[in-house]
Length: 450
Ligand code: ADP
Ligand code: ZN
Ligand code: MG
Image (cartoon, rainbow, N blue to C red; front, side, top):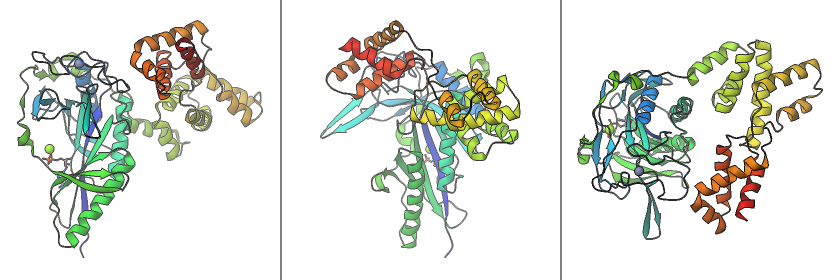
């Protein structure tokens, strides 16, 4: 029996991190819990409104393209993708069809077909026989990246998605949390015994990297068994059932002509190469470059390198130490403290304020001179409270701002929803740029609400 080769191509959507939505001035806030608050006449598609393009979003997609070493468009435009559904109030989604912002390029050895920019849809929720729609997400900038069908196993597909998440975070393009739906992966899967492609199936509802891998493994096995038992694979969209760990048929796939794409006459054409803000793009150090650099230092294991590269807070601290002291012997100790003590403390307390590079270097000096006597003492100094204690006035000021800015969340809290307090504290921590003590902040909020 000839063996089968699986072929996989990914389509990945990622919400971009921008101040406002793609075509209106509404806030783009993925953490907004009160439904239908970040909405306006434009993103609710009231008659007579017109879209205004968000340049920050366009720039972020181009930055991604540059990082992929892709071809950035000279000319680009937006198209209308027409369909009827409550999550798309205009009756069409503004997307890109013939002239995407980015074509070609690759990531981790996987060839990319294109990256384009579109708007996200509203979030629908089905409760009993009713459907609820939250338009906070409608019109949020969304990039779609499509890979070539060049992946042949589940692990490579999972690795690609993880690497893209890391890249988006490094570029500041998006948070790309899969469990929050900020990044959504669809896997196209086929199997074949020869050089021609088999019929592909598209799998959706993949809410974690693990699900991406599991669903591909399941689907490859299902297709092979189906063909072996005399059946044929039909082109369709299948969902992933997380509980049962199986794919199931959802619908036979529509083709692109069903959407009647045409250029959106309400938006200007983009002359990318003629725009200074769009054509002068500065890339930060990319994850792949950082890996190389860390490897060249010679004292870090691959696993340590992945841990450092994968966490922005750790990366920043290590880079800050490096900029102050490039002595490899010192950096080796710094890496050790960061990967163990510091990373361990972040795990215990995600809002913990990290020490500064200066403080870390001071601890290293004292530890090496014997002024700090034991590893335990060193660990407890490193993982202590590093934030300047905030004054009660400053804390209650932040608490007031948070309460004023989130009336509906406050109402939920007063109605007994404990999780709402978590949210308010989180907003306060952001306002304080991480320098408030979360418990003290919670107390301050509760004092005002009492
Ligand atoms: P469609 O026209 O159905 O949208 P595309 O050619 O645009 O198909 O490809 C969509 C995605 O499916 C891409 O990620 C591509 O790599 C992948 N793909 C295309 N053909 C196959 C195949 N035979 N097996 C697996 N994936 C495929
Ligand atoms: Zn709006
Ligand atoms: Mg297609």
